[in-house]
Length: 550
Image (cartoon, rainbow, N blue to C red; front, side, top):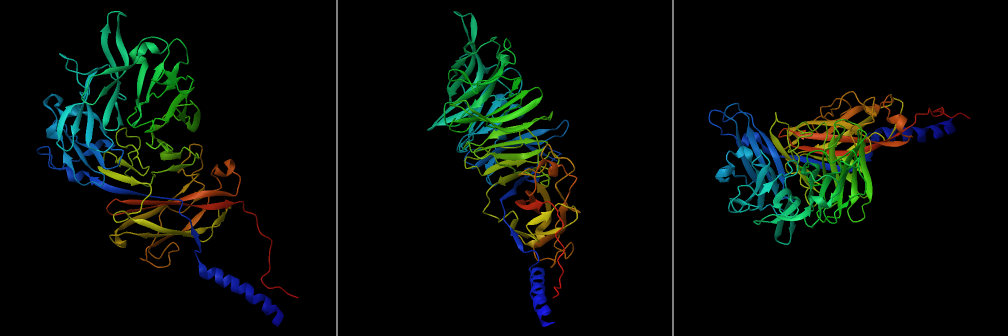
């Protein structure tokens, strides 16, 4: 009998140790970011008369590449009394300046000033005006003096400096040293020798006049400016891109660079860059660019090495909604894009890895708003997002946070085990250690969502998510597996696999499934942390008796 007990006690000891450890597996946090509210519509009340507290919203949001400043407008859309005001401020929401009364008289009403762009250091704000017709001027504010001047000078006797501009991308800025050069599409003077207008891509030094960079007759096909789409220039190098449609050679749409000019890459499609291009698509040094094209209703996003013309795929979709606001980080390290299935996805252009940097749990998300998502800062760290029109907030997204003085923090994520069998029944418990500098009582909620290779809802995925749970909330109230109420450790004990998801048809197990935890505080600040579990095929283990008899 003693021999039997000797063999039993160690086994019982192992069981006791396992039970005592509880949620023993400390999951690595693969990615963390904060979404910090820096501005709220209530900070911009007091106008117009009789509607001082009426709902208002943000738009035309932009940032300086160095991340020091943002610019935006605020609308109060009251029928018959609507008003719009223009502001710049520091990237943390401080130092707000109202520029509305500093616009020159010819820009009145301020409704005509659009397409805001800040220079590299946030010292100048550029815009186009008017916002109607076929001719425009480009102005800029010196933000130190608040003086507004023409960025490109009209010809003597003319009112507007630029004719036949591209409304989708009316101008771009290139800064080399202290010299700012503007690039734009333009119809110039009549050439009496060629008996045609000088049409094409032009440039102008800041405060100077337009000079032709590339003539439209240098590209094949019909000399029709409606077939030329301006795409932008590198921020710190003389590299200029445009789209061109050769109607005599179908499919005849390609992306070109003005040097040569040459196609990059050397191919043509049904459509190339047919949507708004408010954000940058060229790296700051001009070495690479994003390339968006459509063939037979399928949409493709790639990166292109502008020296070699080599194309590398990033994403593809057959959705009629395509991709929203594809953006190249100034560093050239990342591309960002949105779609109905991509929440501002960050693609690492060296490795191909992707990560949704917004979440369906981030309720203020502006989605596809063309002027509500800014560019990426030069250090690859920040961008800014305006909220849906019925909310009225601006958040700063920090993709490498170290300061949690305002937003909450998720310090640790733990699971019962790092592996989960795909049987739809076995459950694992997740805990998240959440804190807030303003105190634990300020946490509004903590929620979870599963990920597949960094994405919340891949386009191909059906049958809901690969993980199932009774609800998406984590609890710190002593229920749902939570051990101690109010200790800052939030718990959900209902996580299991969802075998009906076609994830399990697409991948061979074992396979890591992402788990995203999002926490929001009562001041509408967020933190997001991603980890993963390994899902494996469920095979019943052989029966092992607890008592081993001689």
